[in-house]
Image (tube, rainbow, N blue to C red; front, top):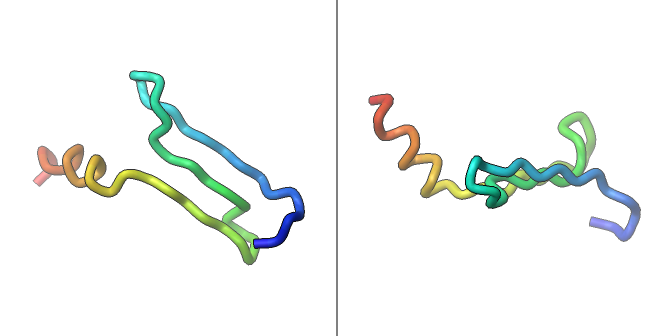
Amino acid sequence: MSDKAVKKNVHYGLDGKAETKYFGARDSDRYIRIYNKKQERKDNADII
């Protein structure tokens, strides 16, 4: 990534902790999503 401005979004859970961070835009060449995969698997365990 360069030092140009990059759009950043953070989504917070009900407990006020950051759950997912997005950098860039989906339709651009640079897009990063950071999330807790372990928590996602735990949340989806009841769906099976």
